Length: 128
Image 1 (cartoon, rainbow, N blue to C red):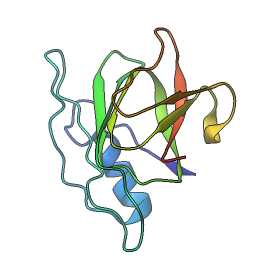
Image 2: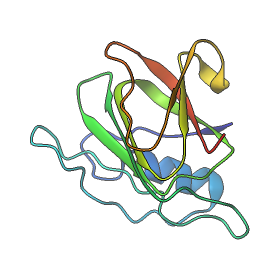
Image 3: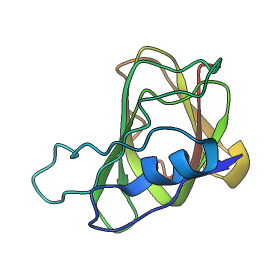
């Protein structure tokens, strides 16, 4: 499982952690939300790794909005803090899990779908 690092108010958030653990590019993009400037970008995939196209958005435990762009498929991505209000804007199915390491109750989200209101998650997997 890849652990994503949360860096508050730094415009680098989760993509930086993903880049450090996977050797990916860590170019940061601003999240499009009025209340915060937290951001993520996992836009470059490791050689030979498949990636979804598009963005996956959520709200962190402290109420800040985040997204990851072009996430890797088939791998469990752990959140640094609980997420809610997930919105799958990728071209593949995303499954959010209540537990760490893609365990516990889950919710499958087709491209364009939002998670049910109140569903809190700690990990996500794309493409399965």
